[in-house]
Image (cartoon, rainbow, N blue to C red; front, side, top):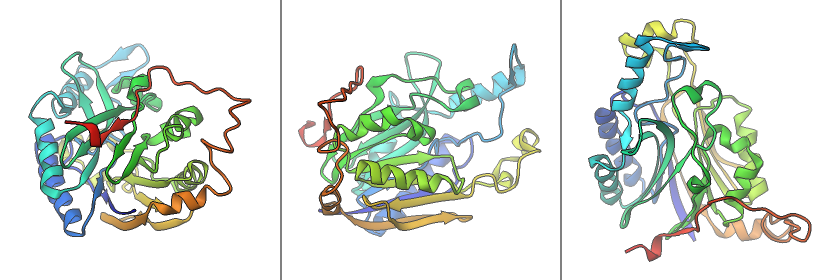
Length: 310
């Protein structure tokens, strides 16, 4: 089966959920005009990845200014119990494409935020949410940790979808939780624009014998609104240069990496390449040595079967 995929490397309307969703609609339409069946947006595209911010938090101390900034971030985060869900579902429905959206998410159950990857079907609506199980470094100030219930995969009409966010991809057991469910299209929204990130994406493709879609924002310091410029005075102007990339199950770069520019990577991939790649290596099959190793993920849900959802 052949699937046309699009990765959106662009900037949000920073800390403005409504305007970012409007921009997302326009960008998704551009992808749909190119025939995309799967459209991916970067890590925390809504309402933006707050690179360089410390939210007034140091060891043993928090500031009133930092708490107000967190409140603003919270107010502009996605809540899937509200019309935000309908907005995302309408984008998927209008484009006829599956959406995988990186967003900062709040819930109606608590006051914490999560770095999330939201899966939306063009026909069935919201399929599920992966929440980051380990925020990196000082991301832990603003994002809570999720558990094994968050390690979802989706058996969709365009293949088995799954993946992890940013440095979760350096967690071998988290990757294995995806492989053991037979992921075919591995999606990796990120904020990491280092050139050494690309070999990480290639390694995952080779290890999992799957297509890997690495998707990042393109964002410069001057894109921050004036109100936030004082928070990032010491940052380099080009602090998120992108690097979105599409990689084959044999680790070959098929499209990208795209650096230093906003844009959309679109490519038709052939899922039959996955079977061919597993002739000599299958991480969940003849290379798994289940007679030696035993692997279990607590609370990981069964594969979400898009075709069985009413």
